[in-house]
Image 1 (cartoon, one colour):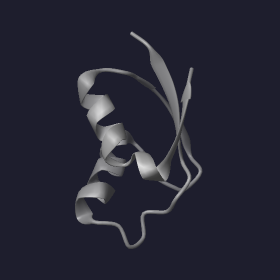
Image 2 (image 1 turned 60 degrees about the horizontal axis):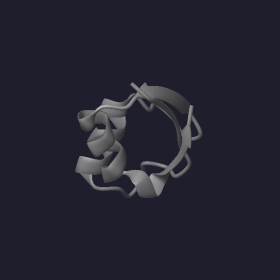
Image 3 (image 1 turned 45 degrees about the vertical axis):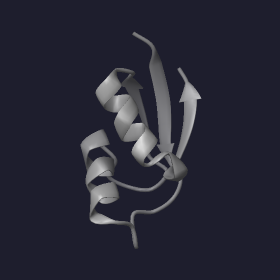
Image 4 (image 1 turned 180 degrees about the horizontal axis):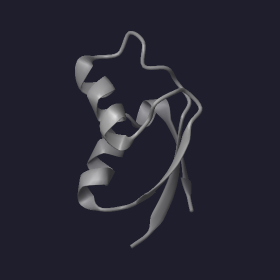
Length: 59
């Protein structure tokens, strides 16, 4: 499977509970944290939900 690097570039404050829960499910703990994830349909859906808060790069 393909990997992707995602960085949280906008904070969680003033976001809906659903978006905050999605960020926690992805594994983000603080702003500007970078994670590397395997792409599968579940992770892709989570990324799509909060894409406006993330910087996405191919790994």
